Image (cartoon, rainbow, N blue to C red):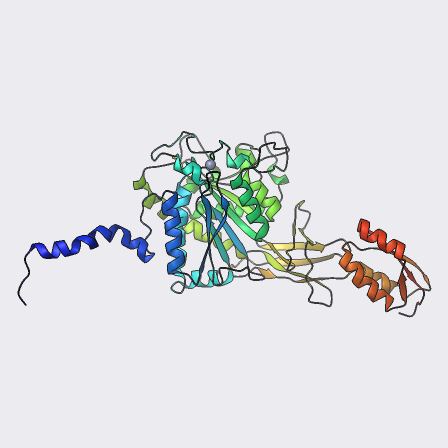
Length: 469
Ligand SMILES: [Zn+2]
């Protein structure tokens, strides 16, 4: 072939060269170590969803004050549905718009997980047994007003109505009179709708893994031992800090010292209306707050270092969702799940509740635990469960079968002569089933009391005329 004029190849290549910076995005690979403003976050999420459509699900949980969608990308083998028994994880970045490192780390984590599925055994097994939800930017309006290189100011921290979203949640210990913002409302609805059992919220301006409570009913200094789940929270926080490039050192940022790089939130400084306390209480979800950069908005050249420091921590924390105990609660002798049952661990003064499928999860450090499952209208059950030290892709599975109290009273009646029995039955649906059961066993229900039961949802009078049950 004749050689071409020297200028031709470069002219032919020109359109391609113009596209080169965009190629990684088009291919859904190699998220560049560059900051992503809101529209670019959206673009990255869309591209990853297109390129990994089998294992990702892109959805919005609501809109910011200025109308920006709050995008979440879920990653799992069946990303669009909750699979019974499978734990769900929530990672949230950029609650303060000017604290941006978490947002970027979550985009790199998205890349790491999606590319690892099918290529890395740990990631594949994890995503086959877990669903991870990533919300890179909870406060996109604040983000748009923030400035690269601004380490210390509060410009961009709040939402578009000047509310600090990490002071905007209903509080456990005090009345919070703040008007709940759309971004906060979206998080609350999201957390109520998906049974998350592990959550992490990313901030900047310090270097510490911080855990509940963020507020306290006590005078400072705080009695840390009185906090429920303090042991597992210390474990989760240490999992992050000890796997991080330098968080565990404790004095990375000038002026701060955190032993091993962790702190109880209220022990650092109490705050009202924080997100982690609300998600913990109302989501039945262990939640920690991760401060991952001394400078809130460092210059872009620092991003690669931050990813190197945070990568193992992000992965190791995800794996912890499979510690502890999980299971389902059923009506004894049936496959009918019991929703809203209380699952208590020892004498911890907090309880978690079963989902509509009767599921529960309790992340726990290794050891022996007394687990009690109870619900009004049912006998409670207490069982000792051993949580092993080794970590697999499932917590210890313990299913519980609760006996309805009404059934008990009928059985008790069989041992006696004709008499009147009162039993506590809460949901009206149960009353109907109970009435049918007892009618078939020679008991009749006093209609007046039955109506009282439906109105008050509490007491019902049973009259058994036939003691041979
Ligand atoms: Zn913050």
